[in-house]
Image 1: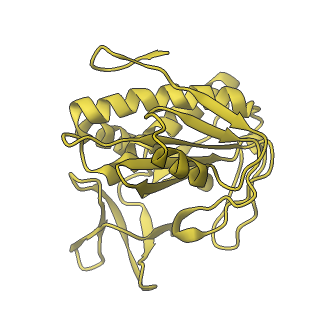
Image 2 (image 1 turned 45 degrees about the vertical axis):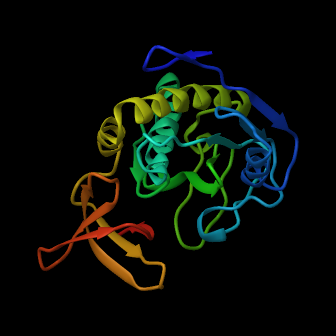
Length: 249
């Protein structure tokens, strides 16, 4: 039970399974069957985990794989901005364990849905919608990390931090409940501000691969008021990105 903004309590129910194909796929089915907002599903292992744009997500035991769902209301901010709320929640949760371990490492959020640890991917977030529900999936490399050809990856264990996935699930559920309440009760502003505080610095060189396969290079220039990425181009212009894969240069 967690006391959230607005004076109401949120009860997060976390169900754990030893193995499933994908927690997101399971929660999409549960959403269609009437599952309640705030419910979580955690798997010790996934056999068909996936990331953004259908990419496979390696899901061996020891890491955190979990999904929750939100049922957006008419007065809520745009549903895609839940990605920012989820990102600041998972950054807050991971920071809790890094501080407790005295780890001297640098966390940074990367648009749209990644958390980096010393510039290597630690966390991925995937949003999927079904009817009136948005399912938010999160994979956190606690014990180990996959070897990817297109980007560096890492885990908390690589930095001497040991976290039980079941305990991490409770921390993340509490953090997300708080940030969901702020997103819903105060609007996107506080979430966006927190995201920017925890992002890589303004001026970071980025390359954005667009859905059509083309790429745009520029410098990170913050987020617009709707949460889209702003790139400062070589000619001094600014380009607003609403979709794409971002790589550090």
